[in-house]
Image (cartoon, rainbow, N blue to C red; front, side, top):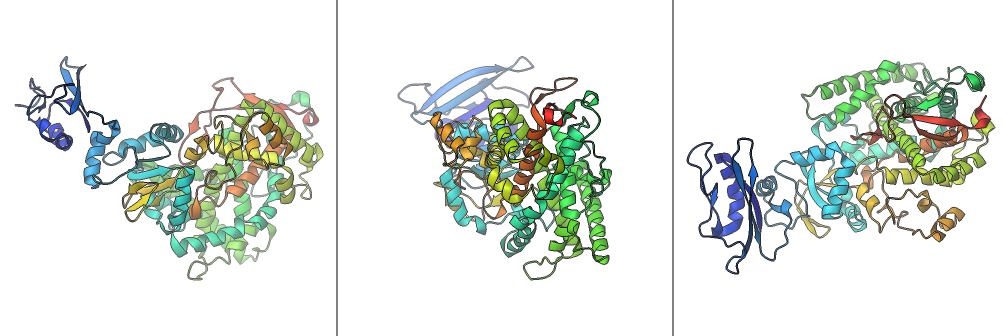
Length: 603
């Protein structure tokens, strides 16, 4: 056993530390100071009998030292450790000890780590930098550990064996209670993340109509056209790409691909954080609604996003998020009703609305207009920031790995000519062509998701005491399979710190063979228990295929129109990005890039 206590004044500290002293048997007895503010000579804790710091008579090793205080006094610090016992110092962290007593966990074999009393410290450390939080705890505790997520005790895991075991019972776990209250409220009862059982099955069944292969085939040429206008019509000509080249769901941007002359072109610069968010947001409004709202209304999506993980319902962020959700759903519902009333559901731009007009719930009851409108908003929210993050991260990883950029350009320029890019011909941009001929491009997207993970896995509540991964997991604990743990494991991804898209190529691909012949090792990247960037099981991200497709088409245009890019260090530019961490890891707005044009696009 180990106890560590700063011997301080105050009756509250003494009462709190009685929990610790109870583990030390007869060796320590708490004694209250004579008066408030006094420091007894023997400290707040006095031994019933002397403890020899290292003699054979004592079962403990004892270290004492002093620390200074602002008032000039000293606190006496005592560390007592059972001989021969190599315990984790977190095990008797004061908050952890009290939390263990409160949750009645004293006799259980829990995973290593600490939750604290209410999970407050762990939650705030996670919110500060989620990726570093996970990395540090994996290094300290291993691939299965306990912590506090959003003020709830949690077991986080990512080993292949644990993920495989989790899949066996994951479908029976409730989801709603694991999410923060603000998220549950703003995500609404229609959000799939908060659903379980038959209700969730029905919701996911409707997803397949708008996110399955046939839907992606419909989206591909539209995405090519919108990406052309963004990259060639905005970024190439120095427009910063902030408009996305679309108004009201239709291409109303003046064709700038042939003017002005190259001598008059402005530098091609991009703010990946802001510009790509705007582009993806507008693109998804076009795909899912057929129109783009006025920009001030569209930008309410940012307020909604911030409100989801507000610290409480009394916070201004939550209030703004509620207002934003109301404005967005009102606009979508009004538009949907207008489309129905005018008999335009069969028109091409209303593909998504047409599919949901026949959607039913688990009781075969048709979706209401309000539910369809809410679904549109939630699906745009879920997709736009994920796609924008993936695009921005891909640009950054390719800056750091110029040889991978050269391999990527060789593939994309070999499949799509400059004339293909300028026309965005629907017969050229097909889903089959992208899936079958852009294998390295797909591998770059996958490796980017591994190297710069966007988010954690889904949060599920464990309803009963169970054995998991060799440990006891009490009822009420959150269980989450975190992809970042798997991505750091050298057994899964040899040399995980190295950006290597080749690891995701098939074994028969010559580029994969050259990669292995260079001395690299192949891991388990094809195993779904190892590579799960969108989560595990029934709550995994349904839109990952769409996000990947959008990023692939974006990379086709960027690598076709530009030879290279680098960080723009003028004004407040930085060589590396800072990140917005929650709920999706995405580059912040200050980071900028400057692009070098391909001579074929110097017009």
